[in-house]
Length: 295
Image 1 (cartoon, rainbow, N blue to C red):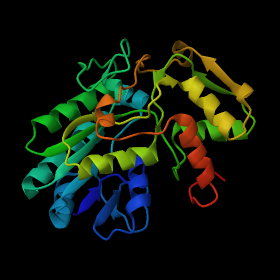
Image 2: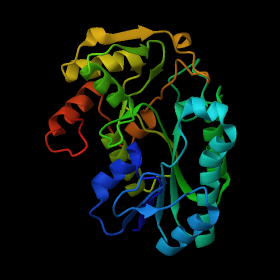
Image 3: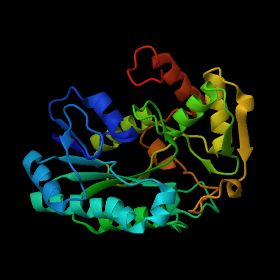
Image 4: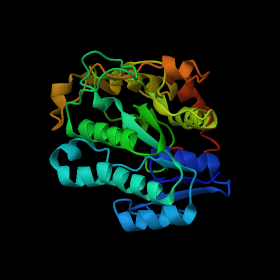
């Protein structure tokens, strides 16, 4: 089985690389962040995307490539559409042209308004920001295509990341420097360990599942509470964490507050995700041998 990961320099894509880089039938692309052994690909380029997919003929295309900056999506809508919907359109067309392949796409709880969360796979999406609207449009494009697919709805993904961009590093680096950190105390979601996310997706692929699945950690908690758990696990000063209501941050894009996901559907398949405490302890146990652990 040939597997292509489009956009493998980010948190989720790189975790697939870390776990499967020794498999000769796995291929990984980057766009702006060059990595050895990765294939250069700007997935907004339809012609280049078709060339790569035609050449590799993947049975599975895993697509974490996106523009996930919620505030920037709100203010730079042309680029947001190009780097979210445009990428999905190009990959769908390339896969349909090649005549094969299953598409694995990553969606978000930002497709909901955050009034009645956590949400199940059957709840009706009601996005309140442009990023959420684009992700919902991507979902609809995939469902209406001829492709087999898995739409993975996830949120709060954290773990080792060489670019140090996810919430874990924001907390770890700020507190390690002895600086105070303001975090929302009224935004709720599921912290999701990236290692578990990748393993769950591989289980869904192996079981030949299709459709939409919530793949998140089991606990729906506030960002403030998650920051406190990071501090406690890594022996950092919890007193430096200052919880603030969302309006304090003056974000351009509105945020769903009571969001997150229910996980009954993956549980019926035997998939179990770690809660934040156990996941963070797993990270701590791996720190001596993981080449992307914070120094």
